[in-house]
Length: 121
Image (cartoon, rainbow, N blue to C red):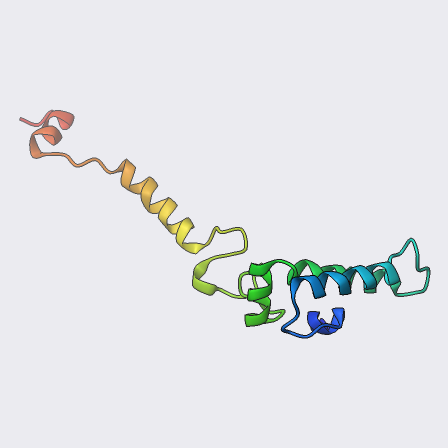
């Protein structure tokens, strides 16, 4: 099932201010709160309204949502945007960790040092 547009969920325009988003959330959260509304599906609507508010009330999340919609490549495995992931650890980090560890094990030896190790004279 595809998710509804968060602006549609809250009933606000894409140019809505933070205050308009907050007011819409407060109204809908009271309307669909599971403790106040025992109708079937009210809890799911409450969760949908809460998710929409959490995204649209945060400036960076809202900017990502406006740009990518529900398919933000920075969320989980939705994409490979530069090799990063939601927690900030990506493929580059894995490879650099291995390369750094290998580089620390490399010892540059002069011919004299090699001779001493193998008792070559």
